[in-house]
Image (tube, rainbow, N blue to C red; front, side):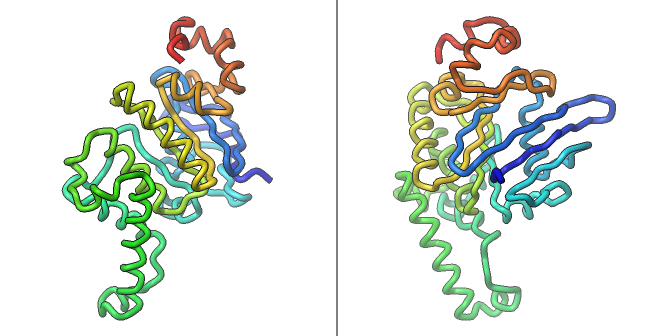
Length: 258
């Protein structure tokens, strides 16, 4: 059984069809791209998978368990984490605190421990900080651990957001346009960063991205949607040469830089 199975996912906003009959299977360690023109329904698909929206029809199965109807935090505890098109850090908090807060879904102590601040509370809080710091060190962000998140360069803020998602210990990581707003050098670093994550954490990564350079160089398979419908699915080379994909992107030049 595949780790992730999306079956016949369909969603309407009123009378507007946003996603129609979307299907996908992913295994642990996969790196899959999701592309399409603006307004094609890509982020809506992520929102359906993570519980932000409830689909009109279809199923989202993680290890056979149907996630439809669960709240976003419940889906996070099941093992799916995501980032967003626009960076959403707690800007006034330190980088370390941003990571520690994300660990809240994994805490074991209860309400009484949190009020009385007993031994169990302090032991677990120390463990959370240690794990958060180790995560930052893994990505070269340990020197910025006590810096306010808002003071970091844009590329490093994006890394912090991804590290925060990883702090929830996901098996599937959804990245929504992680290269948005980055310069070419930052994009190169991001590509290496994503590949490092997959190696070090052995998780599946599903990425939405408009930068064809990213998608074509790191993804093994690519799903293409247009007006909410799948128009192609295959390897980067197959997608690059698919006439329907070229038409949706208004010409071959969209892929030239990749």
